[in-house]
Every structure is written in structure tokens, then in C-alpha cells.
Image (cartoon, rainbow, N blue to C red; front, side, top):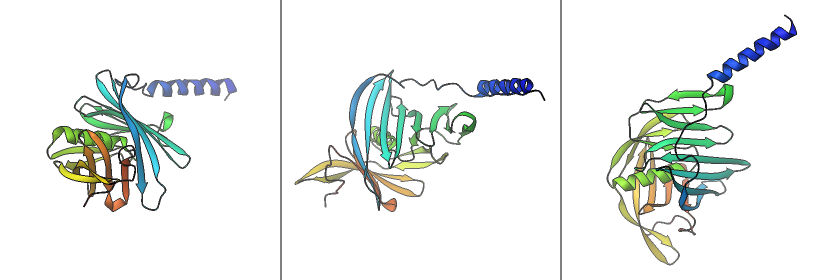
Length: 236
């Protein structure tokens, strides 16, 4: 086959592929807005060095946007989460070596991983309300706590695990009073017991503010550095 025919066929194939690829996401609140909250969480996991994750909460176009960023070794992970005014997730995107995003389409969560010709999409079976949980970021737990705090009673929702491209049940308890040690004093707070699949997570907050959390079975703990400089310590 002549060289020009090969080039022509290649150009046609490339054009068809580009036409078939989905365009950019149309999501409200992805840019702009006003920052209403920000801080730094320290994330600890047994046997590993602590890492820090910065976050900021924005109000834009009638929605909330949670931006978070952390570095694991030489890898930087950035995430963005869009929620409505009732803290229901609309869109989640995580950037890193393995980009992934989640959005609600026709009432079902649709997970997209990879990019370009390696882009994959899967629609999960689930029923609202939803929470989106990222692979490593605290940002989604920030929003999950805000949702539980707004409900103020035991709830069951569908948790979308973006990295595993699956959906499981998340059951959150009503808040109970607890004290957190800060230096020589005790900080009054609330604790939520959250059951995610077969795992137990404990979220500690004060009003709308997420102070920290732990997953004892995995040795995973995080805390808000500005409020708990000495770490997450439960008062006796």
C-alpha cells in the first residue's frame, strides 16, 4: 500500500476516535467562587511517615466545591468535589498517576478512569443519597461528615469508592458527645460511628467542622492541624 494511503487511513481513524471521545465535563462551580473555609489535615498510617493534606471549601454558582491536595513521596494527588447545598455530591475528580472522576448520570453514579484511548467508564448500581469516597484524600470525608451533621440522625447512603469503581453501603450513626485532648484542656466535640461495608470509621467534629477521624482496623488516622496540633487524642 502506498505511503500516502496509509497516512490518509491513519488520519481518518484518528479523526473518528476524537469524535467518539467525550468532551470536557460541564459541571457547575468548577472554577471561581469564594473561599469560606480552609486548613490542613495531618494523615497518619501505621508504619508510614505522616503526610499533610490541604483543603479549601468554596461557594460558587450555587454549589459547594471542596479542593484538596496531598503529596505521597514524589506523587502529588489533587482532588475536587462538587456538592449541592444539601451536601449531596454531584461530581468528583482526582488527578494523579491514575486519574479518576465520578458524576451522577440519570440518578446513577458513573465512574470514569484513565484518559484518551485508555478512558474507561462504568455505571454503578446504587440508589441516592450518595457519598463519594476518594482513594487517599480526606476531602470526601470532609463532605461525608458535613452531610451526617446536617441530618443529625442515623442514615444509610450509597458510598461510591472511586478507586475501586464500586458502590457499597455506608451507615452513619447519630452523633454522640466526646472530648478531645488539646494541651491541658478538653475540647467538646461529637463523634459519628460510620460503617462502610465491613469497616468501621470514626469521625470527630465540632458543629460543621471535621476535626479528625480514624479507621482503627487499618491504622489510619487524620486530624485538623490548626485545631489539634498534638494529634487526635480522646479524653478519658
